[in-house]
Length: 216
Image (cartoon, rainbow, N blue to C red; front, side, top):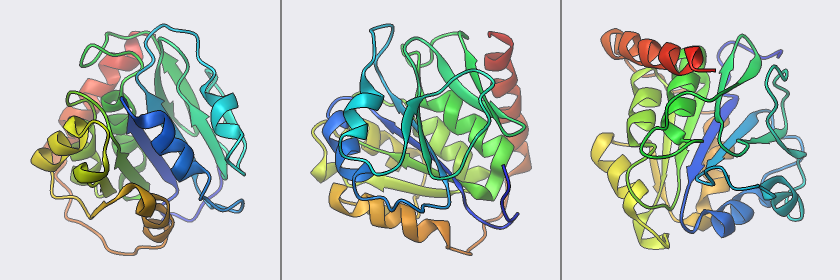
């Protein structure tokens, strides 16, 4: 995957209850020449998933289920398949049957943590509507490793638990209603602000990510 080292170009997005419509709204508003890769986790468990087909009806970018070993391409939306954690390493996607996180597989925390360790300040983490608190620890990891953080305004969520938990875990760069998420993502791609890295947290995140990867 070719990219400038200082460019934010990895976007990880998590949603649960209410996420289907939220994601359709966001993905339909992204430009066709988006200079980033989008990774989406929805809590679907082991149920068969038609999410790529559903999202593709509104989205101008290609949308697909992620495949193990698939090279990461720009201007593409990758959706975590049923019963697999979606991760990335060395420019390719890694699917894992590692332990469930927050009672979910696929889950947000493994994806966000892996993006934080692999891509640091290049990562953008987005938490959307959903129950419970999956994604809060992952968004904290993105922030600790220098990435950009976006949280959907809980008042615009069908289920505000996930955004509220994220807001308790980190002070995000942006808190915006659903209609502003796509614009916030596009704006974050060229945001050149940099954060102080937490190396202790990064090492802990890297260890946790390694455990998930060994569960393949």
